[in-house]
Image 1: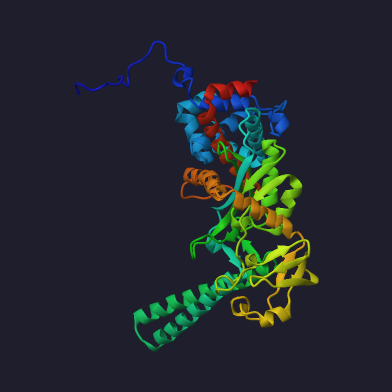
Image 2: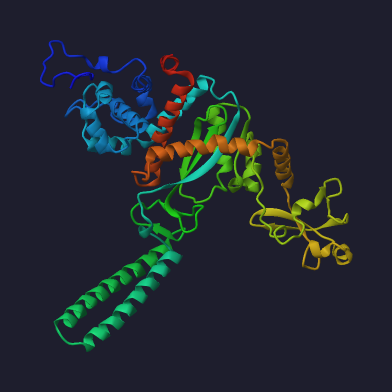
Length: 479
């Protein structure tokens, strides 16, 4: 082939073979991984095997295995078997490991046995980012996203789902019994064969019914009345699309609004975000090292108790209040149309009438005040647009002023929710694109948290390299 760039003959020997260093350029991200792990205090972080045993076969240094995992997650290679294969053929991996190639079981056991230490290593990189002054803009956005677990939907059981499956099995047994009666009335070899096959199917369905009945007892005894057979910690979670729920975990992240780094993350098996605002806000504030932190979140995080808890932690929340009442949908006045007058402890209704305080009650641990005025409501010309009851009652939480202050902040910051979307949703999209159409590889909540920490560490490493460059980052690591 003429006029093309030609390679070397595969059989051509070389007098002086190239060293591995020649294959890894100075701008190769693998050098950042090497420096980062070398500068970690692995023993202080809690890694096992830092001090070798005096006898027995020598083991691999934990720093070597950690380098392999960080490299793998940055390059979307999360399987221990694939990492073993890469160590035998990938020049970058050979450079990183010094041509060592641990077997997949050794690689997998390292991730399983060093979960807390790996998560601590992820936090150590966030501390480095804080040292580089990347969190000078004290604003973070919080969001949660559902990630699939190893457990399939068929191996997850709730009270409703197991009852539905038992009804389906019953219907199938009845259908096969009717077909068996028809087959028994017929003669010939085909009818006898069909009859045997139907009896086998009925026996299998009855065995399945007995299994479901045993599972039903376990479901009713479970604390949340739900069990998963493959991954016991995974839970059924609803998603936006109808009928598109999954069995998985709820991953929470706090992302700084300036550089879009994931400053804090958490994995839970609770399907909603309502109880996560204060926890994630406190984690983000501590990791960013700021005295006060503005936190942006969507309506799914709204909870009066969580907003109140944020105020005591030095976290300033921006969370829209959802409209839970159907009054507006029915064309009637909503609670936001009633104005509270704190000096008199009364509400002023849309018609200008005053609703005085009548009673105080405690519901679900919350102290609530009730306001109404039956006489004014009966004679009010706007009553049809206000309430179908005898009078309109307004309920006020004892700490409602905290919610009102937050709503006032939101009105003064009309772009807050746009900033939230542009900040926190992109990292989730990136992580899910890296993972592909797959699920977490590990089982149990603690192991899944470790796996998520490796994803976050890989994401943050690539972000910081893009922000400040490789050489400044490695100098900061060595400092």
